[in-house]
Image (cartoon, rainbow, N blue to C red; front, side, top):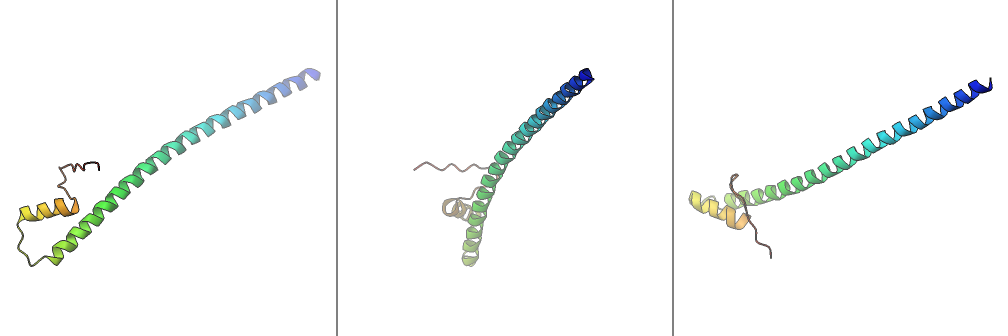
Length: 100
């Protein structure tokens, strides 16, 4: 009888240790995933802020064009105004802003 009790205690102890190891492993996986999602969220926030800024510039440019619709502007003049006043670029261009 005493031998079976010792075996049961050992088996229970192993099961508890195994359960703790599994819980730790699952916790580590969840922490890694949470950190990854947090980083992705920060990147998306920055991208959204950039898109919001671009949207605001486009809305200002649109308002400018509506206000000046009676003026006959050439395509080049419109592009120059968009670049200089509103910081807009063509999709294939990169805007370089010098540091102050």
